[in-house]
Structures are given as C-alpha cells and as structure tokens.
Image (cartoon, rainbow, N blue to C red; front, top):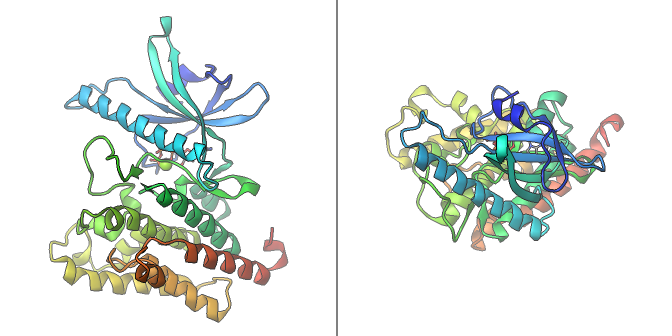
Length: 350
Ligand SMILES: Nc1ncnc2c1ncn2[C@@H]1O[C@H](COP(=O)(O)OP(=O)(O)OP(=O)(O)O)[C@@H](O)[C@H]1O
Ligand SMILES: [Mg+2]
C-alpha cells in the first residue's frame, strides 16, 4: 500500500462513501505518481472508484511550487471535463459522480482533492491479460463502444489523447466506456502546464508525435491522434500489442524514432509500408469474419493507422471535411460484431 493509501483507507468522503481499498497499479503502469486509485463503498454497499491527487510538495523537483501548481491546475482541468461529460450524460464515457477535498491528519491539515467515478469491473488491459484472446465479436463490440466515446467527446470539442487499453473500462453488461481525462484537451482552453510533443502515453503515441512531424492544427494534431489510437486499440485487441510497440519491432533500426533525423516526407512511405504489413499480418490470423468483411476490416485499419495525419481517417469522411468522422466506423464495427458473433462457436457467444 502507498503512503497515501495508509492515510486514506477508512476515511469517509462527502457523499458517505468510505475508502476500503487501494488499487495497486500494475508494474508496467505509466501513470503519473501523483494520482492514486481507491475503491470506496457507500452505506448501501455500492462501490465507486476514487481518483485522488497527492498535493504534497515534491522537494526533489527543481521548482516544487510550480510543479504543484501545475498538478493542481491539471487535476481541476481533468475534473471539469469529467463533470461536463457526466452532465451531458455521454453514454460511452465514464461518469464522474462527485468531487471534493478529503482532509486528514491532526486538525485536517493534509488535503487530498478527489474525483468519484461509477465503478467499473476493470480495464481492458487487465481483461485481455486475464482472458488472453477475447472472441472477435467482443473485440469489434469494444471498438464500437470506443468509437462512440470518441464521437461523443469530439462533438464537445474534447480530444482525449490517451485512448489505450488501461483507459477503456469494462462496465459488464453496460459494455465498455472510455475513462481517464488526464491527457484530454478542450479546444478552446489549453491544458495547463507545458505543451508536450507526446500528449498521452508514449507507448501508444501516433507516429507524428513519436517523430515530431505534427503540425499545430487542432484537427490534425489532436483529433486525428484519437483516430490513430482507435486503430492501435484494434491491433491490441486482436494481438495483445499496441501498433506503436509492434511498429518499433517491425522497423529497420535506422528508421526507429529514437534515431531517425531525416525528413518526414522520406519517412512516411516507410511507415506506411510497415503499418500496412502489420495490419496484413495481424489480420492473417483469425478475424471471425467472412472474406468480404475481412477485406473491409483490413482497409479500415489502414485508414486509422495511416502515418500521415492529413491522409488518416475514413476516405468518405475525409472527402466530407470531417476526417475524424466516427459514424461510418461505428456502423461497420457494429456489423462486424454481429457477423462475427453469428460465426462464433456457440460457447463463445454471450
Ligand atoms: N471508474 C473506474 N472503475 C474501476 N477502475 C477504474 C476506474 N477508473 C479507473 N480505474 C482503474 O484505475 C486505473 C488508473 O485510472 P486512470 O487511468 O484514470 O488514472 P491515471 O493515473 O491517469 O493512469 P494512467 O496514466 O495509467 O492512464 C485504470 O487503468 C483502471 O484500471
Ligand atoms: Mg489511465
């Protein structure tokens, strides 16, 4: 248990929830070390997930006060997004149900701001680690749910920027919802703190962020990043590995983002070839679809994982001027899920 956990277990939050356990981050977790997850229980026995910010000064930081100021501003920014999504009742986004500040210690001198969310059964990273290979129809159902979440957020001018398995939450019979607005950005309001070249988790970053060839355009730099992440999530669901990780293995060492210093125009065709090969390899295995849909899925993943953000997205959406359009994808993932379910062995259908 963390030092923060030791202080907070047993404490009661404003809504009457008592903190009962701390979520142990997996060893591979990339999360910032200033946010902690807890499970709390209400008097009716219902459980919620509580995200707590540690606002103690980090004395090892070069500028501890500035560091703390940014942490607080970012937490507030995340909280505002989570609350706005809950107010609008976005169906595929995890809802924040309360927020507040917990005061502990002698005289309540230590303060911990928190956000309370509807509790999920777990996240997709854990689900895939546990079940190894989800049936294809479930994979397409998850992609459908996440595409709906992206559409809902983009309609509110929010770029999520960190769509990855650990941020896709499993709500059982209610399906999957997108959580974690810790890297999200609202169009009209910049995120507090420095603007980073890689907006979310580097292990899932789109090529333009890895190689820094992005352009400072809201749609291309922010919204099209979410589109790539959706394609990467598809690869993860089918293989257990993100597109970024697979790309690192596929590329010749001299083309890897850690060493490449050449021009983007020379690089993009190389990335296009590698990503197309990856999609073909992944889909050569079992997709649960008939040959026609298999071809269509191959095309869709190539559209999503296109390394040039100006060319990324469903062509019909791009020609209509909405390259981040999700409606066609939502409809296709729905069709794929139904088709794969019918073809699945009877015991694989839920
Ligand atoms: N509503 C929820 N119910 C149950 N578990 C949750 C919920 N929200 C988050 N979690 C779990 O806690 C983990 C961390 O939460 P979250 O992603 O919001 O925080 P984070 O500090 O930004 O983490 P990271 O940087 O790893 O994405 C999630 O990956 C998930 O396993
Ligand atoms: Mg997260």
